[in-house]
Image (cartoon, rainbow, N blue to C red; front, top):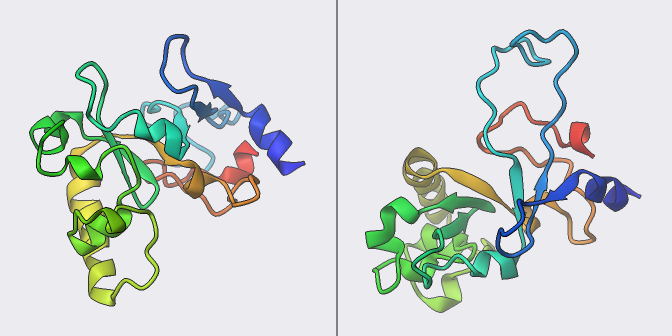
Length: 178
């Protein structure tokens, strides 16, 4: 039932977009909010809708095609790193991190193919601290968030992860969406 409600709130991207990924609709504004959200905070211009990427869809954005943006995920957050093409583009030093969730590789500062995964099992406290620092001070500070991996938004059974909070929308509540 939850999956059916989740799917009802997902809509396809614009025609001609690649990969058939889905986006979650923005939560409706409360009536009479007059520039304030339901928490009473001043609202800013809404960003693009949250986009859900499967592993297969994210793989299309690995920097191999000149006319495509370059995306990578860290902690399930998908960043557009196209502006850092000299670092992430084809043949560039960090290209191995693109087109996938490379959380473990970022935490370990590793480009070893075995580390280019979302899995953080067995990371040391120092590696986890490094991951949080790089995530906040590099990726969130420099690159726009374009979406989230399916693993971050959905549970293994496909139901919505009710603990999901978009990094760029701290007051977002999945319960409002699904």
